[in-house]
Length: 401
Image (tube, rainbow, N blue to C red):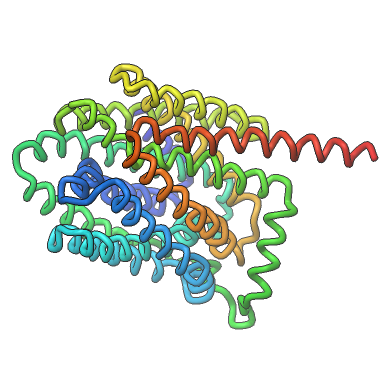
């Protein structure tokens, strides 16, 4: 594939890091459970509101650990935190499979929250600092896009195979998921240990430092734009992606057909990644992405299978571009010594806001339909358009005063 010719164009000293990072992402997402996750929860006897609570527990556990995990990563080393996170993900999978009830799902999601909290501030920061140590940080976007493409290929191929397997043998789906997660732990052990990814003994991250970083995000125009985009448009898409496969199941598709669809979703994502590498990121880009996402979400409300499929593929392209833009933009805009902590602050805000939003979505889905509940993420996207417009207008007004 042409995308992976990028690897040969990288400087030799960073190719190993890029390969390990890409394989880690591939095997994390080459997981059959991604296809059946929320459908598996619902078919185990819980309703939409309970499913939203399970997802909310995941977010709350991230909220509780997000900033502490970033501080630990900056202070003691990010590689250790990443490995611990991967082990927690494996433990969560085992809980889902061994205890197929609401309590088991809650415990499993606690472990998954640990995984996401530990990795959100540490993994990209570790890779970026490894490249920076070798004076190759300008290649971060290429390394990130290669790993992201590997992730999507792993996800696409995994769900494609899972679609055929899930209709025939659910036990095999579970066993294969555990094997894939174990391989991901192995590649986490191979990650580099950048010396700049561990703070010096003189650096103490206290509550005061965290407050200073929050203030910087709030007052820095570009970081504030990314934060607002993440709290509105990104969360809107997160809701869509969490319930996308459920909507296809509601429309009568089998796991096999859903797996085939998910494979084409992966191809759509790769198109978005390719486009992201060619376009510079500006505030206007985030507005355009949000308008496009809002249009896609509104199409989800139609209840039409063909329109829903087209909307999901379209939004996957938009999400790919947005993910690359946000991650690259964010890493370039923050200091190395506070990179993991600052990223954790953003993730903390996203997840604490996601809890009431996801619960509200579940209540709406239980009392109407899952399709009608998509009005909520549509409202979130519209919120970004309004608020960002007001901020731009306010900035222009202050300029002429």
